[in-house]
Amino acid sequence: MQHFPIFLTVAGRRIVLSGGGDAARAKLRLLFKTEAHLTVFAARPDPQIETWAVENRLTLIRRPMEAGDALCAVLFYAADEDPAEDARTTALARADGALTNIVDNLHDSQFITPAIVDRDPVTIAIGTEGAAPVLARAIKADLEEKLPTALGTLARIGKTFRKAADALPFGRPRRDFWRAYYFNAGPKAIQTGVEAVQPALDALLDTHLTKPQRAGHVAFVGAGPGDPELLTLKARRALDEADVVIHDRLITPQILELARREAILIDAGKEGFGPSMSQAEINARIVEHARTGAQVVRLKGGDATLFGRLDEEIDAVTEAGIGWHIVPGITAASAAVASIGQSLTKRGRNASVRFLTGHDMKGFADHDWKTLAQPGQIAAIYMGKKAARFIQGRLLMHGAAADTPVSVIENASRPDQRMLDTTLARLPADLAQAGLTGPALTFYGLAPRATAAELDAVPPSYLQTPATDLQQEAL
Ligand code: SAH
Image (cartoon, rainbow, N blue to C red; front, side, top):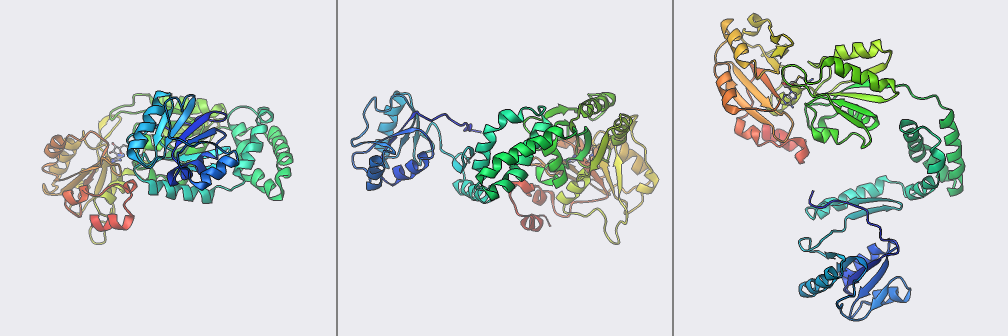
């Protein structure tokens, strides 16, 4: 982030602008939304600016700017539409201590003005650091459409009610009250008229004050393989509502970003072999928070029901008499197989697929190697990197073909996704050489449909490639 968004106090303060043409006019229209004192320096101002001056909406000084003209100004806009004059006036304003912006000159500006959606006092600022003004405008248009125009009025009335609402306990009860106001009772009341809003607020507060407190609850949520777009809508909603999020090491920062700012985030990060926070401690944390009435999200990579020690956590929660439910997620195997352009089952090739773990609590995990070694078998191996040599040994010992294809997909669905296309014979050596450090899924018996180079070029979905293009590229 090269530009940090803030909301600057400008009410009653000075904003100075140099210029009297189109650029000045456009900027002034925006600045009229503020309660700042506007001063414009222009030797030959546009008639519209003259009119605004007569209407007392700004102070017009009909001469070029001089030293000291921007004293006490918080902001300065150079809208001279002449690079030399812009540079001159900006230098003067800087010397006077104002933050400066040159219209259409990102490079020499100390601040930039975002695209704004105005539902005063609700203001949404959209910035793209100058990279994509078109995108900013599209987002603005989208928001303008989505946000009811009455939102500002509701917020203004809501603000006067904040003290009264403090009668509700801090946290969820208060949030629930405000949510009900903004998304239900408020919009309904305002349809009858602004005067209906205050009584609606009073009635709503009464209802919420007498409402029994919501009990704590635990949602075991699968977060998918890492791409935030691969979260389910239910997972997204659970995150929106969570008071506490207890997450694995596999969860990407982009997904954690989606939790509410006030939510407590707890990293229960487990390392490959053995947990760094003991399972007992994780169980205790989940129960402890849910007991306080919190909505707890236990966020697990992929699908929560696969290799995630889910049952131990459910047992602990059940024993504590706390309600829970599971939100399924997209498991790593699904994301990985998509990234190599394959399907997990195929008519005439394999009618079943196994989900294996490379190791369990006791070390490398044993499986039915004899069956797996037979031709046409396919397995998705989780946590298989360290166990690669062991798995290879067992399979070869049971007669598996040395040239059985093996694909290893690291960081499936993430921007740093990598793929290794190898065979059972070469697996350990190729793995060692590749030096994969992220989570990786190993497909035994499955080769990528296209060459690694072609597939590597496929960007993850959130790099904005439409799905159809993606498929065409991959297949
Ligand atoms: N519940 C998870 C699996 C947990 S076990 C799921 O359903 O996906 C952890 C293992 O999952 C990792 O060691 C790795 O083998 C695999 N894994 C998880 N995320 C992955 C990703 N984005 N890419 C490749 N493998 C991944």
